Image (cartoon, rainbow, N blue to C red):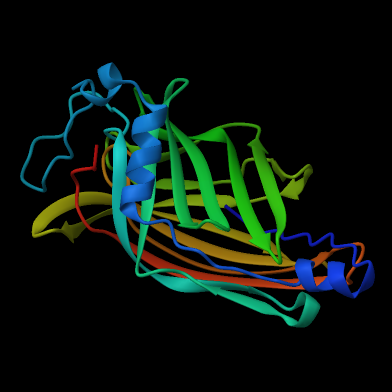
Length: 268
């Protein structure tokens, strides 16, 4: 969940330069995300009741941890991402973004579309200890028509929703992002509650930081408040990094966002 943006643009002549320097920031609405979800998910899986509903603050604890119900979740969102290369560009995030949950491996794949040009992907699995953030993911950026699809890989999963709702000490998996070292520290701060569409929801506060003070630095702080299934109910982040692009010099990237879940019931 860090941000390393590598811009590799080759500008040949004025015509090519004009084409490459066109930047866009396009929203993905809920209807589009739902259409994609339905096209990629079988009817049998969509109508399955294999996952449990999110408990309210007065409910008994979930008997066994399970990952979030599949579907498309909507988030009220504010934030931007920006780079300073090629004269600079800023993408403002739309007022509503979508997180799509689909079956994957031992649990689910979660795809958060902030824009057509910006998304995050991560995986969750349920264990006897709770719900874990798995070892592979993806960060996607596009500026000036140049795509950076950044695979993420870690050496072990991270527990983000403990079944016993107790805090956990910091853990620091060894990760790579597009093959380069990427070293987050995760901390399960403790139990809390959030209100979603008038309903009080028990959550766990999870805090992640990256502090890299080298020449090509990254400073990232992310806070999640997740329900018993690992579904983010609220997400905030501030990110800043400097990357050697190789062709257009050093690229400074910044991102901030705040996203709040609108409903516990996904679109299907």
